[in-house]
Length: 131
Image (tube, rainbow, N blue to C red):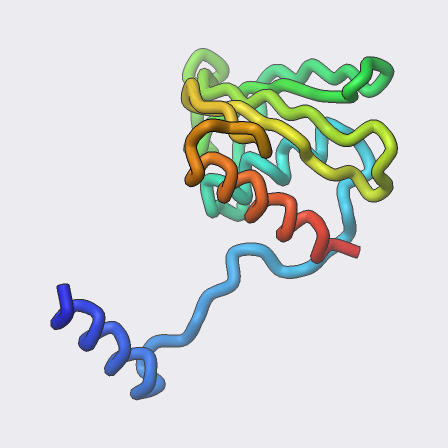
C-alpha cells in the first residue's frame, strides 16, 4: 500500500501525470431533469450519458425526477436500463439535490451509512460550483 501511494506521489510530482477535472464549472441546471442528469454524471464520473425515459415532477414537494440511462452511448433503447431518482430542495435556486437513489442505494443527509452521506455532500458541492 505504501509503495502504491509513493509511486502515485512520485508520478504526480514528476509532471508526467496531469490532473483531470471531471466537472468543470458551467451553467447550473434550470430543470429538475437536467439537474438529475448532472447528479448521475457526477456520481458516475462521466462526461456523457445516453438518456432513456425521463419522468419529471417539478410541481411536487419536494420536486424531483427519475430517469433511465446508460453509460454506453451507442446503447439500444432496451439496453438503457439503469435508473436514478432525484429530489431537490423546493426553495433553493439554483437547484440543490437533497436525496438521490441509484443502484439500489439512496444518498441523503440522514443516511445511516457515512459514505452515502458523503456522496450526497460531494454532489451538492459540485452543483454549488455551477454558475
